[in-house]
Image (cartoon, rainbow, N blue to C red; front, top):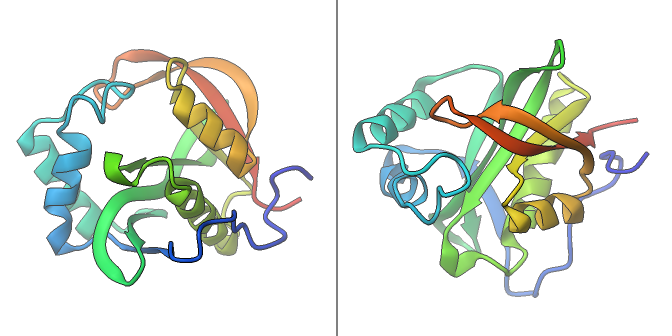
Length: 181
């Protein structure tokens, strides 16, 4: 079935680009500030978060043991994060499914790193065998996110309205990925 994780999900990258994931750590507050506190980085998800919200999110990611996971995206052997990727449980159309998302710093965009990191996160979600389906909700205007979802193997189910992180209704494309057939 299209998109199902029954093989390694490893897009072609330049040999020198090695992408990894590690759990969000104590030292990742600056990374979250750069990703969540910047107007350009958050234009499709309701705008920048306040310092207090970023600190609260960081604390929650360090301490919360809810189903799912959030990772810092690393490149090469450098443990410093260049973005985040994660999956978490959400209610969608009367059931509980994984929702997934990511964000990557501008200098690292356009190199296949985000796509590779998304694949790695989906492999981890599949290994949990908790939910068979993952959804990603991308703002209709976010063409780069739509292209990435297509490259990863998500299938568009059309438009839906979902709340952005600040709770405002946002027109999004509902992307679906089956983790196993």
